[in-house]
Length: 487
Image (cartoon, rainbow, N blue to C red; front, side, top):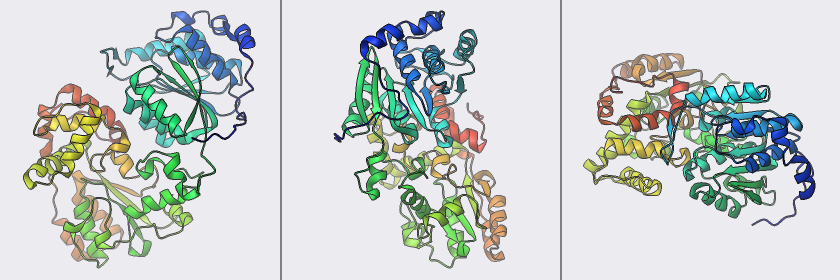
């Protein structure tokens, strides 16, 4: 553990002594918001006053809250910020149907109470409601966070995902507060974060645990910063162009793309989206050997198709940002049929072919998540496990297409759809000036994309809901409907 002496962070005012705090702030929240105790929620008054004080101390950066319910904690933060430097409060709360571990039901009705709360307390000018999930909001975020309050799903994987979704945006010395800190999920994560050197404990008040973010350890060699500063997640989720690990992450992304035609085009493969067919054609286009049986899970090493990882970081960044003439394309698929295809190919196919790699992946994940499995994994069980995993733990074959395809990093010129692969890929081949012989070969290829939907007929409404919530970013960004004929 790093025991270096920390100076007060510039965005936090010097802490008053305990007696002064009691005399000036103990009832300040109720004084400013007399109707506070009428707001729905479980946050105790002493905990709300702690949030009030923490928000009032913030000088620079913004305040982010994950999990707002009806606005009880949001009001405490907003009132404190208004009494301080008037920094904005961003509230992450989807207000979609959610059944808590203890059976509590939350959903759209709570959005009405949340908005009414902001109107009654006249704090609507301080709060920006992001009516979505943490996983969806984080990839497009561009603000530095001085105070992070995590009070969403209290299960371990969910709390861990919430922290690491936002960790790279935290200012050095930022305050991080967890609610439910006495619960098993948050408590286990807090211990891990302290032991790993991410956070320093500050205080505990009621069910709140207050910690301070250490920032990136500058005494660690630059080549190891990405490993220490972030959890072992897919590179696209951790790329930070303001830090020294940007080159490493860009190269990790560039290693997986197909960069051909002397740099005239770039293809980003996404598993179970027709990538084998597309790669085969591109390999022929580049006069490279076609050995699909030898492809590894992670790259195309056996086929020696170049990526962009051999280029300087600035050049890779320019290509990804669309500042070159490179034509960049990707092919996506309806999340429902993609999941069915994964199950048929990797899980059922694993039983038939005696290749148990993906079966064992699901079994290990189910054990870690404490989810039951049949002797022969059913489609519903597979979907339930895959939809419960944290993004970083998902195999690329079922991880979100948005993340696997780096749609947050690469500015694509064309997004094709597997449901129209023949016409879409012909357009791509025409665009990159492929010979007619290859275009004729591609025209003979047809994908049957809807057959797997029948599997969803036996999946419960609860599991379908969990799936659509987990993969919401794919449905939203790729424009696929949340309902299908078997819903």
